[in-house]
Image 1 (cartoon, rainbow, N blue to C red):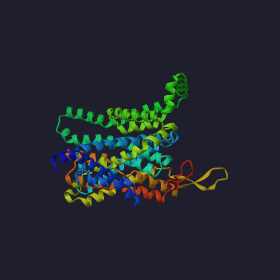
Image 2 (cartoon, rainbow, N blue to C red; image 1 turned 120 degrees about the vertical axis):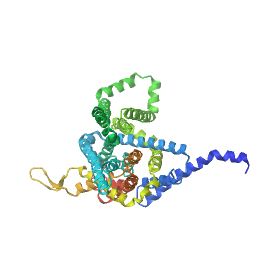
Image 3 (cartoon, rainbow, N blue to C red; image 1 turned 90 degrees about the horizontal axis):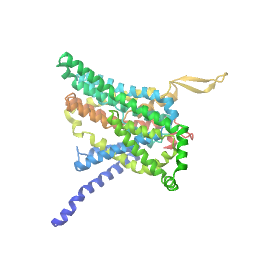
Length: 460
């Protein structure tokens, strides 16, 4: 082959590899789905095997670009979750979602800490491992709710809201990890310096919570403004007073303009939220929730964004999550056994949070009292079914857990054996969570009817 032909072929080689990578994502997801497991499991495995740590199929610049595309896919999934919310459901289950998220954050930290202590690790190392296991992946939750067509159910919206709040709590724990990292340095300082360091550490922990409260409050204000009669009257007045050409342009392109508002507003809110030390996903979710009562928002999203979102979601699971897994470090120190033990703690900590999925006292629906009241039973079949489904939905971890573990290892908090065990627990929980949720849906589908009366299994 001549030099000229060689030069012509060189620039397209990364393109061939990129096409091969997308093909692997697509077909691995389909094959795993045919086997009865969620497609995202196959996409993550494909990303792990083809990523920088194993096959190193793609150039570094392409890897970085795919990670960014995956983050965009995650933001789109979160905006869709906001659009799918029902205001009445959020009012009824908001407190329950907060309690569920708090329990699902604290229990993995506690169980992970105890497990690592029993394995002989230091208290600081054990705490860092528990913090890395604390976060529920909102991306996994959104994908599962969408695939199982659960976003229009009260339970699906409870799980989505809890996973979003869990992300805020994970930010606080990330701040705690920074405080743990600085603890040894603070012990060597003078009393005055220690006081200043303590005040700074307290503000570092509290800041994400306050910022998230501000973002949520702004979102609530915007929602009430949009829902107010005066806003509707202003919209009608503006429509009547607009030039015919402008009115015609809006009517002919209303879906495109709504998508522009959702994506543009979501990106702006995400940027502002992250700048305020909250999570960018909360800002994106808030913009979607502001439009949750607008049928045009759901129609426009379904027809214009959903096809692109499906591919960007594959990028998220294959690249943003799959590339993040340090496959070579999994076998560092031969710590597979402790990793399996830590996996039990990681799974159990999230699954137990499902106890808050619904009230433990459920209507019996069998015997109606003479005075018109319905008899209630304690912890009946509906309660345990909800417990199992909600708990399994919270098991999946995401890229934040791997980021926390890597940060702790770089800071010297996690020893190599502890890091290896933590990575095993994160990976296995990531892969087992969607499978466990799919199984829970098959065996405990009662109580998941939507507005049309169909169960989740019938809809899926």
